[in-house]
Amino acid sequence: MKIAILGFGKEGQSAFRFFNKPENEIFVHDNDLNAELPEDVEFVLGENAFNNLDSYGYDLLVRSPGLRLIEETINTPITTPTNEFFKNCKADIIGVTGTKGKGTTCTLISEILIESGRKTHLVGNIGAPALDELDSIEKNDIVVYEMSSFQLYDIQKSPHVAVCLMVTEDHLDWHKNLHEYHEAKRNIFSHQKENDIAIFFADNLVSIDLAKSSKATQKYSYGLSGDVYIKDNNIIAFDKIVASTNIVKLPGVHNLENICAAIAASWNYTKDTESIKKVLSSFNGLPYHIEHVLTRNNIDYYNDSFSTNPSAAIAAIESFDRPQVIFLGGFDKNVNFNQLAEVIKKHKIRKIITFAQTGERIKNILLDHGIEAVEYNSSNSFKEIINSGLKSAKSGDVVLFSPACASFGMFTDYKSRGEKFNQIIMS
Image (cartoon, rainbow, N blue to C red; front, side):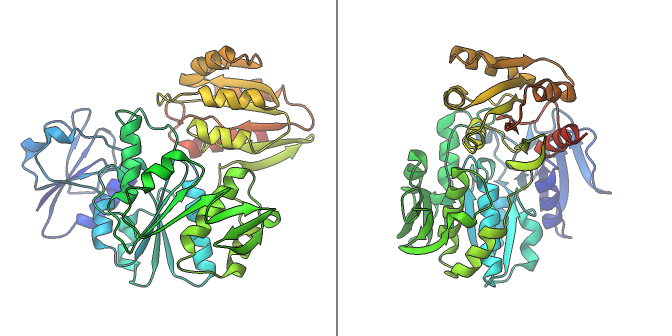
């Protein structure tokens, strides 16, 4: 079979390894002229790499998740690494989607299952590329899959346990509009059967609506209300007290919601409350997810570089009731910052520094909402941007780097952005 791998990032490389068999002839297309390619593989590189794909005579195209194709103009069959994984995986899959909280929730599910003695594979953005794990997965294992809208966009099968967290506005630079973004998320439920399980966020209207597409007879909700919820500082699952919220290390109401989602998702496989308590009392969170970096001069510094949309920044800001110095800005995904402005207006914000591509737009929106403690820093020096805000912090404050935007332009990804922030504040 003549196969083209479209996009040669992490997922594309995994797809190459999966399809690289004697009976297949593999080609790679990538818009990066400097892409590192395996030896003896034929390739098409550059800005036109994804044009006129039918003209090459391929039997199959493998679309990497971040690549947007105009499918209506392509006659060659298209698959994705996610679709191939679902076709070939022998074990139950717990799929988790949402605008924010996916990585934390998936990690909590995985840790709870592992602690209870179940062999578990964490795949997707938070774990290994799914196809790389196939050979090590056995029938009685459990796969926890973090699923983005890019992966769900054209998925042909839904996971056995589908979890939809809060869905807000995001990725409008990739999706045609908000409706298409929602419909991509809906696919986590759309192909479920009656014996599957659907879990949705009871406090989010979009999540509630998307779950209606599931044919699963077992539908459960979570949140501050629902089948798994918080009451009187207790986490309650299906009328059973599981743990006290006092043992939870993670900051913020949003993380209590993530915990409820994780318990709901794992409940079909374990009801071992001791395992759940052990995980909740020891899990400090993921790097760059409202991560406490240091305390100096009675000022706490938090790195939330993973905040790539306004809803993530809102969750971070709402995690603290102390005065805050906040940094906002980055790549423009055409999202709306009005709700973020409303939240900022209600909190104790000492200073806001905006920067990069969205910086001026965010500043103007905040000013329109009557927020005057905002300054746009147009510098190309990230160090200069951060230092301009640090001088405003006072004893007892929180310095919060939660940019609400993607990192592209100044950085390759949120990790490199987060690393740089840590270097600056620790120097």
